[in-house]
Image 1 (cartoon, rainbow, N blue to C red):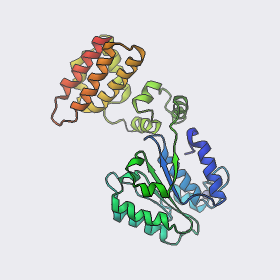
Image 2: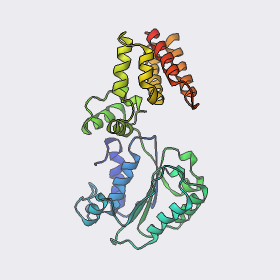
Image 3: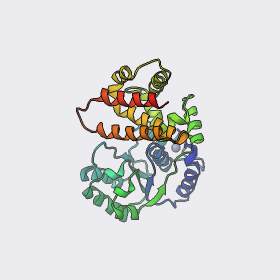
Image 4: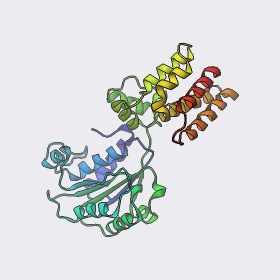
Length: 295
Ligand SMILES: [Zn+2]
């Protein structure tokens, strides 16, 4: 995978500093979710480990690059976690940084979702940030920097990663084989091209396209709200999120009482769905009926 266009300038700058051995040992990448921060960190890690780095980046041919691509580079560690990152996980990662580099080069520890570190874990990491070992790089990633300890943030070089503009994101999605992405589809996924791509690849639950076709049919009078709501009940949170996006577009295009009330109804439905055991068919059918009435 090559660097995404919206990070390209930053990547070249960091590569140049890596080559001249002036790259900070602790990097903190922040920015909205789904814009490719993690993939960027991996590109950077692969470059830092490459034995034949050029100004364009890693070589993809040296032993280090081959090991990296195979997912078993001995001097690269990632602390991926769905839950909290405890002190043991952090200590394990740090131990790897302190070990001698097996390929006689750099060592890299990547921590996606760095805000998931517990306070003891963050304190364990702090020591490494304050007293770095030679040739080691720590790359912390988060979309919630406010949840990190201030001391961690202050020891890192901060990079606020920019989100792509719509054209950049759609162009990149086309390169990934998604030919029919639209601005509306992108915004239904929080303007996050990586989130959209993943959702399309996984296709769990109701796909956005199915939703949009169903909605269009409903608006054209070819379907009724209760039937759709029954079909969609298992994906209710996604459906309500997409409906809210639709309502938002309506508010922008037709700023009137009915579009505002629709948006408000979606917000309320979102809140109601937080309660387990709520009647999802009823919530969805009320919303869909309101949408049908509003056009
Ligand atoms: Zn290489």
